[in-house]
Length: 600
Image (cartoon, rainbow, N blue to C red):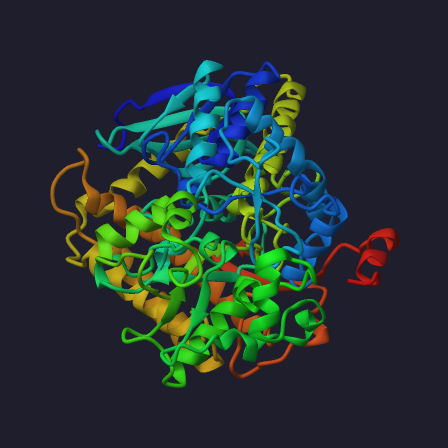
């Protein structure tokens, strides 16, 4: 069965993933004159980028002329608890405005100020209103714009194609092998360079905003190919996901609700966030409701509301309120914009949120509060890349977007994800094309290795072990949710590793009924290999970091520890086992260090 002929394509640059980063990389590589292919696991346009609703962060200075790249850089570093790669944060802050204006040139229809400039809204952790937006559908508009531009350029697109293995010629990339989700037929892509833009890992948790595609494919592909991972312990739990009814638990509620005036309240109606302002942010955060309301009205004192603290701080505060018995009926808290803004304002600024709650929960957000709670949302960790080129330590392999680590440090600020996609997506396409051009000959693919991978992919269809892929997935999600979630302790994470090891042993016994033609059970069985690998990397890294920082909260080590202040936890795969090491962050130059010594 494995020796059947497989479909073969040959390209200079292959991009795996067709969200914002993948599309922008494909556009740039194609513009450089190399033969480019774009592969997506689902359908073009269904990227998880559309879930980034609130806006794209860039220091345009349209609402606050005082804003500039240095302030954006400082906000990003402070939000990431200084664990960020400083050079990535600098590039991101400097180049984001040009990338937003580029999207506008390509047809993106942003909301406008009275003077006709791109309007910008407030978001957590940003000193100034900085998020360019299209209502609460910004990610969707970005995908629409990039997709139309890519199609216009004639880039080859391969939809519903699931890549399972990266192939190498010696140390360098030679191609990728996978299958068509519809037919089950195998496909080989020969390539000089590959860009990973596969997104996140959230489907390993039970309560998540992530859709079915987010199974950590790119991280597992890179790890198996010999690339390094960093910061895998840093998982962001977005503070505001839907929690009722159960069928929509985890679905994202955009930070734009709070950016446009929404407030968090407990079951007594109290604005509890004033009790949870960390020392790090006290100098610039309103410490009472009157002062916060003045900030919303005219921003005269420029002290942000605590409802817009960075996401890790807000998520922990919501969790604490619920645990103390001050939560909502279903274990979260309330998010209220109805008492703060008129109905027509809400309908204009947050149309998607209005329809989401009305249709899925029967809640009219113009009249009543939303019930919300933390949901697994984003991975700050991922593939280690060079800041300027997005290159991994595997020659010919590049990564951009959520799959790549470094920019966001220990916690990502809202809106930085979309600008990350276009800033580093562009650089990935640029440098992957340059690498491909410099190679004189196409790297060689080992036919024997292709045969071996094909045999491995068919195991679930020929196994008689009797284990069920859906049962294993449910157990993994329960394990990660309970043991490696928002709050972590050593004994629970050790238990998680035992469960993961047990599930890995069961994986070869998974039996899938039916054939290869669009078989969701088979697809899940293969995705589980990636989810288990990523879950183990996350758990081992979380055990190694014996402190609390950003998206990583240890109940047994509740404080930050200077020993980990400037350290990445690096994960490598060696002889089928994961190894970990602590390695220092790159040293920040003095002129950038000085920005953190300036007055607020």
